Amino acid sequence: MQWDAAALLNNMLQAALAAADPAPGLKAVLPPRPDGRVLVVGAGKASARMAQALEEVWGPCEGLVAVPRGAVLPTLRLRIVEADHPVPDETSLRAAEQMLALASSLRAGDTLVALISGGGSSLLSAPCAGLSLAVKQQITRALLMSGAPIHEMNLVRQQFSAIKGGKLAEAAGAANVLTYLVSDIPGDDPSLIASGPTIPTHADPVAVKEVIRRNGITLPPEAAFFLKSKVREEICGAESARYGDRTVKIVASPQASLEAAAEVARRAGLNACILGDAIEGEAREVGRVMAAIALQTTRHAQPLASPVAYISGGETTVTVRGVAGKGGRCSEFLLGFALAASGNPRISAIACDTDGRDGSEYNAGAIWHGAMPFDQDVARVALEAHDAWSFFAQSGGLITTGPTHTNVNDFRVALVLD
Image (tube, rainbow, N blue to C red; front, side, top):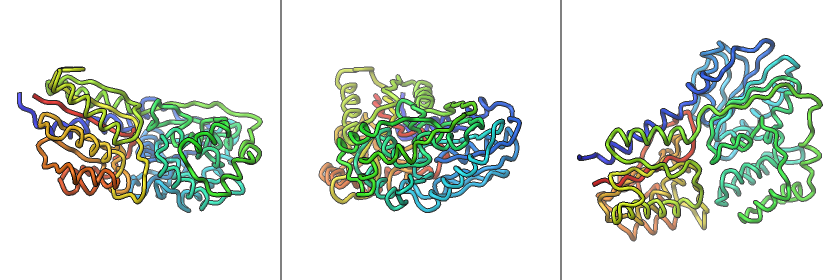
């Protein structure tokens, strides 16, 4: 059988994105509209789509949702605002303050609905008392450059926030809180998705200091003093005397997208192997490992015989050394993969961020196959400069989807065809 590798990889990507659409999952778990006052808040790359789905079921709702710029969708009544991502801006601050005020206006018998997805950490930025937005921006930039995994970055963010780590739910007090999540966190820990604004956490400042030390993160002086003196525990750790009911449900996850892609491969006559939905590590190194698995198949028909699709999800990281070029973790993964597997025409691969944007540019990721022109020396220079976008722009390998209104993290496939 003859396969078109590029077409098959793109079909698998489209199936993964369709499975990540949060609307069907949200509609399936929504209860009847509660009695009393209902307020809706949300933040993240999938939150506009969730807001649409909610109003399709419940009708017009009062509330506020923050999304990245360019990710607005029409709603009946819910107000949607655009803020910067991945570094918070003034809109992020105002949105967080307004959501805290909305939650605080509720009483027993009322309901706060939170529509939360990846990207929400930057879209809701309310520094603890004594810290400024500028300090939060410096912290975010340091985290993004550090190569720290997403769950560790969000632990740090919680320490300096007046809304993350369950504080939005605390503001709702005796009101009921319904939280619906789209997971972009390896392992699907609700407390870390968008830094858990409605999920109570009690992060140990000592553990957070260890994360900062291990990843070589330099905090601005105000933040370092804040953490050292444990001011956060006094200012941002107040607990409500009485809570209403708390419900948390995940409506879209990485595993469902990987399974949908695997089914496309099987229908095309390939073996399909999901390597994991929570794979983390330095992007280029994960790329080299997946290339090694593909090469093992070409040489020894292991771990599966060809034709086969090896599929993985999770979130890799890029530790920036020196001045960074253009690109993101998916394109850097793919360039590392291509360097390890180049010269083998049986191997091809795709790597895309399911939110539609990979790093600093507006492509979702990139695609590569062994028949593409490939200059090893040029590729190595691009990889060392963290400039994978420029490399794939030259080769014609960039993939652009536009905003997908979802986010279940990275999607990667390596094909080995006969």
